Length: 310
Ligand code: BDR
Ligand code: CA
Figure 1 (cartoon, rainbow, N blue to C red):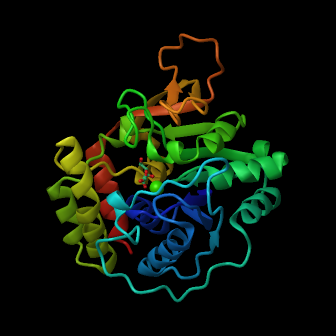
Figure 2 (cartoon, rainbow, N blue to C red; figure 1 turned 120 degrees about the vertical axis):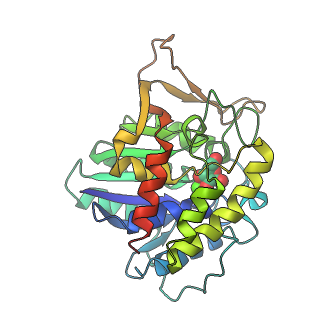
């Protein structure tokens, strides 16, 4: 089993990732930390609680973190996710409470308390909370087992600018801190998530579960895919964030390569671009396992089977 902290900005694809984690007995979710990203923080923390309640797990601890990126003004993505960040299903207002502790303090305290090398961080949004924790308490770096994150892209280009993927673009300085931290990193860039497409048939499989979680997932994906489907002309949109959780459950579904990843923080034109040295043409240290291929049928089978348990 894996002990994990999910750092997230729900977001429909974040929500599906959280559902997958909550449905999986191999994962012990120590806490969910919210960050500003797809929508402002007051919505991401509330959406995280809505999803815990949808999963029937209101005992899950949800913490609120950074309200804005380290250096830049917050950029949000309502055009993708809707005004609430979770448009699609009608989910009730959550009744479970937000934890009083700040997300960054929770991350630090947990990493200092748990046995060293046992906690995996799963960032699904901008890396602000993770960077702040690493800056505030550098001792945590070599206690983190690994960081499995969704972000970046190289061969596919960017989805918010021609060069940059949303999570890294929103807080490139935080991404830089994380990539230089020395913590083992597994990265799910657009190069792999663009191969995990929510086709009509796959969405129908969630609806066919007939459960509250299954139907809500179908409604979230119906809303979420409309944007990308139109934009990219594919059948279905990419289901980014659940790749992170799926990797912990079934690493065999993914293929990638160890290489150096460096993030652009200076040029406005390519701000937030992840420069991935796939061919090893530099002497820069290999700091990440960068995924590029997925068994997409296996991935969706896993998702349906797990969300069916809720
Ligand atoms: C990432 O950006 C967000 O909109 C999604 O939730 C995902 O984490 C994809 O670029
Ligand atoms: Ca996200």
